[in-house]
Amino acid sequence: IRWTAGRGWHDAELVPYAPLSIDPANMTLHYAQSVFEGLKAFRQADGSVAMFRPENNAARFQASARRLAMPELPQELFTAACEALVAQDRAWVPSEPEQSLYLRPFMFATEVGLGVKPAGEFLFMVIASPAGAYFPGGVKPVSVWISEEYVRAAPGGTGAAKCAGNYAASLVAQAQAIEQGCEQVVWLDAVERRWIEEMGGMNLYFVRRDADGTECVVTPELSGSLLPGITRDSLLRIAADLGYRTAETRISVEDWKAGTADGSITEVFACGTAAAITPVGSAKSTSAEWTVGDGTPGQVTMRLRERLLALQTGRAADTHGWLHPVA
Ligand code: PMP
Image (cartoon, rainbow, N blue to C red):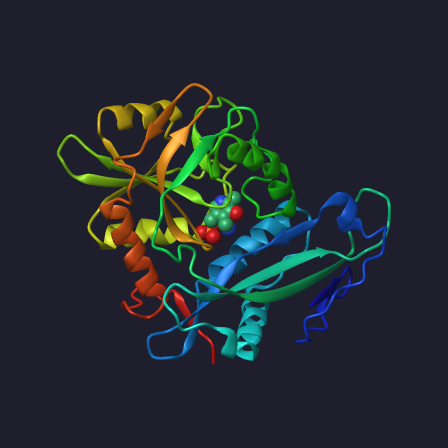
């Protein structure tokens, strides 16, 4: 679907996958007006196909577009485009457990010019790819590197938007995590450099055992500089459905270390569309290194994971209305 200033959205079409030709002065290449989404379509227990919460991706896409001075695609057009592609590619939606069809809606400037200003022409597209099981050999905890050198997002920046530049800025820290022997980077806030924000492509959760012996499922509050994950939101509600207390609050690296030392933080996991839920087994920073729980996937983590996957595949009742059937 194309957008032209003065004309709005036009020319929606479903075309075979093919390379695009790009003008060297295409404004996206120089000024990075580029936003995207990631969502999945799942084969349901009854054989039908449904997308998981596409309306929420549509809303986040609009928020990302606003932040990047790009036109907002109406939510119905976003969802209809995803639905048309899934209907076309229905045969590519796997039926094996934990597999899915991954959808990548994105929008970028197509105007040609060298002046820095919001472009007047954009292209919105959706591409799809079958996604295999994230953990083919069983769920395996990841190790994380807490980045004290680099910052992903600052107050007033683009951290809450899903824009290409955020990921470009993350790559060097992700490479550093690997050099440090870890698999993923954990970002801290830009101002005090102590509040935990999120992982490279996932939000974080902590399972805290409180003084009364009950468990509370806690995630960093939306600071304005972390991505409001749709899985994060789903899990707040699933945890409540399963009878856990939940909280959105600030959590510092010191809180994490102290909670590990006194046994009050029993589990840590990351969540996002790609892997659903990934347990965190250990953490490392420039000054410390610690294991989370006994380093194996925790019980609460696995219970939440099982319920999320059941909801996505129609094996649990869709009480929140999260499934969008594809006709
Ligand atoms: N944070 C970042 C930086 C991400 O790229 C993603 C993946 N979209 C997430 C969190 C998780 O968001 P979601 O649950 O909507 O996939």
